[in-house]
Every structure is written in structure tokens, then in C-alpha cells.
Length: 259
Image (cartoon, rainbow, N blue to C red):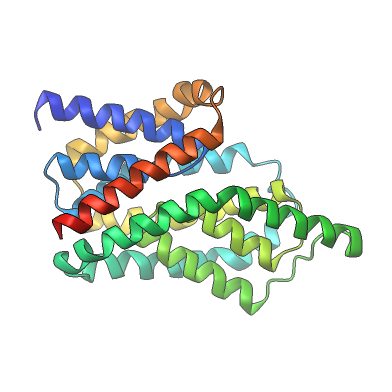
């Protein structure tokens, strides 16, 4: 890895850490940079997932108060998230590199659409939870088969290609639980951490991550999520969201043309 590549990866990690604290979509920054550094698509995806993992731990810690009283949900859905995470990570590892390269532009576009739809989905979840509280009081802790199915699908997606995981999970939880948006955000953060850590364990064992790039991303994303995040919060979240989505769309077009 050259000095120029190291600087590029560090900047990408800083930006991704900051963007993830505000709008999400940090993978759409780190993944193309790792490709530019010469990493194969699968290795770039794995390296990005491991390098950005600390941000999920920070998110879960930040919502520790909102997680109070949701132990039953976490215990019920945690195993589902683990199974889905294992399935998604295993699916990535057995996918032929050529097939993954073909799938990536579609995954990037799906991530961009999820990112752009985030405000609409959040508003829909907020309206539903408000109606539920008005009509029935606090949301039920009952975990239905639909909840397990939705979390499983989101977990498979998140372990396979993490961009947009939080948006997808929040939409699922908003459908199956009638509860406050912040409490659902807390549960989303906890489950996201479980999914990502599950995938990271499998990815680390696979040996396909680039150690040098991973270490740079781990440090840079942590710094970006703290110092950079404080600055990013002064910016308009919608502008950040649209900027990342536009860059992601450009990336998808480039990948389509290369394929």
C-alpha cells in the first residue's frame, strides 16, 4: 500500500465515520475507495465491513437508555439476527467473485434508494407508532413470525452488503412493533451491532480482509464518528444524505459500464 493509498483510505474512513453518524451510507464511500486501491470486490466489501464496525457499537451505546425495557425483544430477535448474519456472510463468501461483481451495482443502487427513502420511511414509522400509542398505549413486546422473517431478511442483506442496513431494519421494526421512534432506533442499533459483529467474525476467519486497509479504516472511522461527527451534525442531514446517494449512483453507473 502506497502512502497516497493510505491517505485516501484514511480520509474515506474519516468521512464514512462522520456520515454514518448523521445520514448513514458510509459503505458507499469506503467501498469504491478500496476498489480504487486495487482490492477485489469481495475483499473490498469485507474490509469495509470490518473497518466500519466500531460505528455500530457506538450507535448501540448511544441508544442504551432507549433499549431499557426492550430486553425481551432483544433476546427474541438476537438469535434471528445472528442466523441471518451468518447466512449473509456465508452467502458472500461462496458467491463467485464474478457474480458478486455483477450484483454490486444493483446492491449499490438499492442502498442509494434506501438512503433517499430514509426520511419517508422514518415519517411513516413515526405516524404508525403514534397511532398505535394513541389507540393501544405502549407497543407490545410480542415478537411475531413476521418480525422474525423481516429481521432475518434484513440481517442477510446487512451481512452481505451493509449499506442501508439501518434504514431497512428500522422500516421492518416500524411495521411489526407499535412503539416510539427513538425506542425503535435503539432496537435497530442493537440488532445492527449483532448482525455486523456476526459477519465480522466470519469475515475475519476467512482471511479475505486486507489487514493494512482494515486497520486504517478502524482508526479513521472511530475518529470520524466522534470528532468528524460533531462537525457533520452542523450540516444539513438531508444534504449529506443526497450527496452520498448521488455519489453512490455515479458509482453504480461506473460499475455497470465496467461490467
